[in-house]
Length: 254
Image (cartoon, rainbow, N blue to C red; front, side):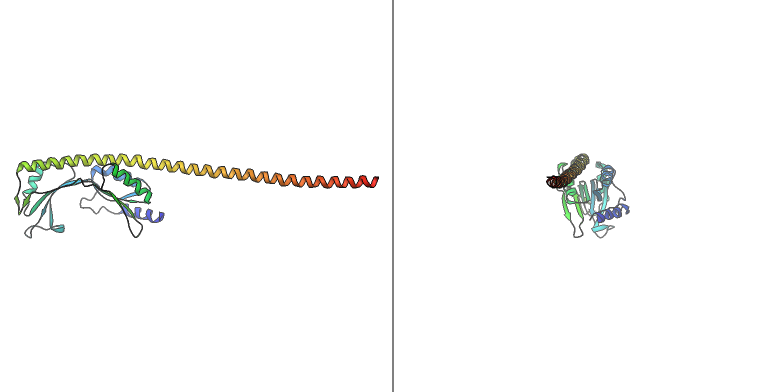
């Protein structure tokens, strides 16, 4: 299992980033780097959170994956002009979405996964969970339900007022701010939890070594005492033999 995990980690981290963006989102680079620096973890996929305008495209539009056209994507807060410019390009049913931070981490052991899960839940990612594959891979998914999805247009026509669009953008931006705060809490929690666990593991190892050493010393002392007993017994027998010999000599003289 140890060898398999090390091989999985080496193979995964050596691969090219196959995401549409091609690299780790700026707001979670420090988090991903921290996780990958630990022997017990490595990240398999991530997204810092994003605000998007997606169009469910009719046949007349350029169709992309799953019949969706990405009109606007931002991993930061957005503006009214960003959204309205995207809606101008819509020819289907456009939806404004906020999708929160998501992260998948492969863990060496179930105990390592449990520690990571506790850190995620405490940081506000209460929908996080674990999966165990048939090959023994332990994957911890960090996620929450802090999302937003609202339809804005149909067949290219805006269904809501500009005032309502302003209102929705305000909500999406607030969710993004809270999302980033949770990421930072998670980052701090990981440092505290993992380092505390490493320190406790080190103390446990030192305690075991000390116990083993004490047992060895006790065995050595018991061994010496046994040897002394055997030696004393042997000398006593010699002394008895000498006494009997002297008694015989004394009897012959008489």
